[in-house]
Length: 175
Image 1 (cartoon, one colour):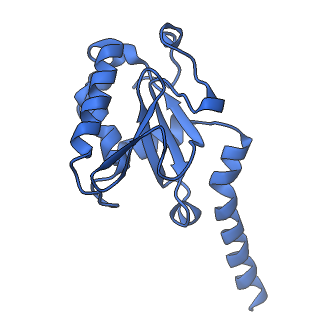
Image 2 (spheres, rainbow, N blue to C red):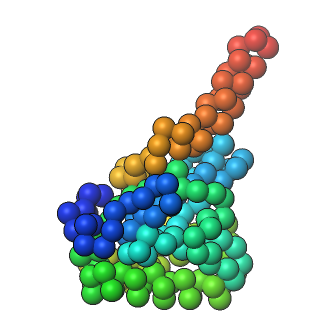
């Protein structure tokens, strides 16, 4: 499997966190309440080679540069050279997946933002694979992603840690 690092990023632009530009990256942000309970579950998008983020934000709607649950807190930078057709193949697949998902009903469990990203990767046959799915993506984001900043890490994990602390304290002090 391809590593998250890429030697060919300079060909089309660098990551610019201040402008939320993540060329050829999968991006992730927490979903309030859901991520607080299960910190590995969140909202996912995929960026074009220009860094513009596309995410399946709701029924029949794929947003562009305005993620449904806020700015990315994590990203996984991929190698566009591993997409069939290179950079243009990458962009074509992300655009086609976005067109497909702009005609779909959103389903939290079965056909969601992760599915949109998986469809893009399958269309471009990223790393010679057509077996991308939401579970694989969630696992790889856990392994290969980087936090945008320390604040991104805190935004992801602090609510969960507060809840766990409250539950533990409640259990300890009610005995």
